[in-house]
Image (cartoon, rainbow, N blue to C red; front, side, top):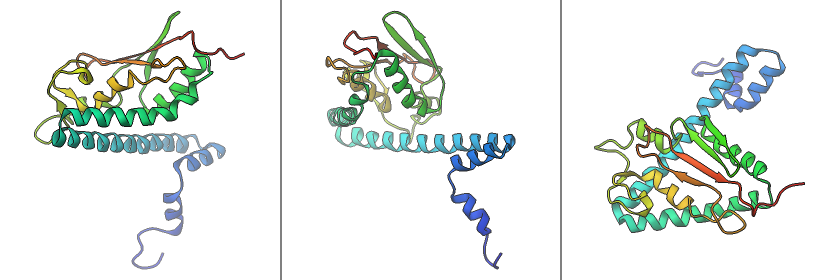
Amino acid sequence: MNEGRLFTDEELKAMGARTLDLLLEAIEAGDGEKAAGLAKRMYAEFLGMHDFYRDWLTDLFSHVGREFGDEALARAMEETMVRFSRRLGPRYHGKSPRRRMEILMTGLRGHLHPLKIEEDNEKFTLIPEVCASGGRQVKDGLYDEPKGLLRVKKPQPMTFNRPDFPVYCVHCYFGNSIPLNEDGSPMFICEPSTDPGHQPCRITIEKKGVWVEES
């Protein structure tokens, strides 16, 4: 290695490679120990990116609420949630309840935390041990003063009529009204816990009759 360099060419190549590719190579080579280490590394990499963008977005909403007030915050939340949902709706249309749950879970598993899933004749219920996004922010102290994220002080619809509501969790109210089903109803309903970060929220997905069953 040339004087002044810190890495070999091989080290730089490995550093720039996708962890997934290195993991697959380790599996193909039969190196279980290396594969396990790379799997844990990939989890840590994705969780770090997940939390970075989660907290960046929440800080942005905190700025909107503090600088422009609750009404501007509500408009921003509603407009962005509606625009985002328009890309999601077509993925579910014409699918059976079973297939819709499978599609939904491919997204929710991206939060990298397990969910307890219950089913009865009318619905599915998802119960996380702790919400992987807003709940973990609260649990990790990101709303604590003096430089914490915003808590919406005034009870109002977007806070589920609760005071001091974590600003990240406000989006759940607007998500509950987005018409993703073919009949214009929301696909799922989130019920925030009475103590976010310490008690689990619940997500309910009804087996709607308007869903078209797959043959």
